[in-house]
Amino acid sequence: MIFKGLIFIAKKIDELMQREISDEGRIKERLMALQLKFEMDEISAEEYDKEEEELLGLIENIRINKENSQQQ
Image: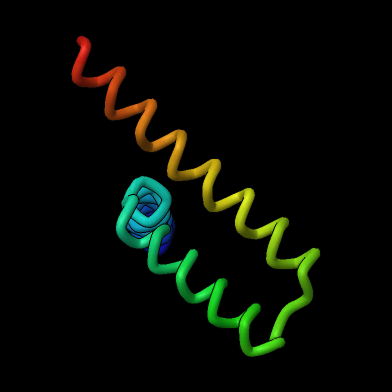
């Protein structure tokens, strides 16, 4: 019984994570928050560049996946 509950929770967490990384709006919000942190000197330029590149890559992947799913 406990094992089934753990599997259910793990699946729900995975669903939430997939939704988070596939939602372009949320990623854009994270980009804005990142920019604000940088402008307020809370993070270095190197940290900003690294995180920005990662977030922009996620947006690009989302767009590619949307294009691929529309072509099918």
